[in-house]
Length: 155
Image 1: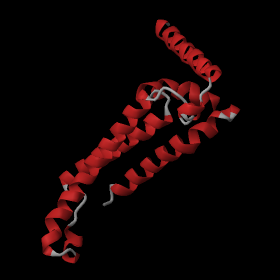
Image 2 (image 1 turned 180 degrees about the vertical axis):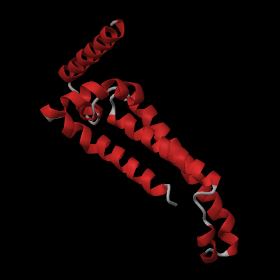
Image 3 (image 1 turned 30 degrees about the horizontal axis):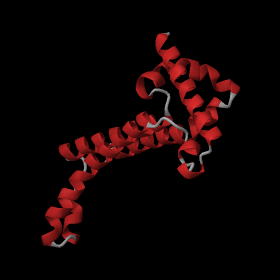
């Protein structure tokens, strides 16, 4: 159990960085040297996407919990006297599936982030209300995005 507190602190710090800290620091002039230094690590680890960082944090947490459960650092034995005998097997199975579930959810989040191509404001527009002018503007935006991706890949 002594190992869980430092892990919880590290996960909390990464979570705060992903949800609020990174965008707040980006707005501060004094933090720009930090981002110049850390940018290569951000690109390598999570492609500078807070969403991917959060997804990978979930995957890491799930794998870490799985490893800790396997080596016996997390033990259900003190809780078992409170569980009726017929539910012990189910409780152990559910408990053992939680880390895998967290890992798979993180993987799904990352996959969805990589396949998301439009801002939510554009996705949320009902198809019936899209006028020809809006459709043309969306097509131009998609072409511009494709050109920008091609230009970046060419560098």
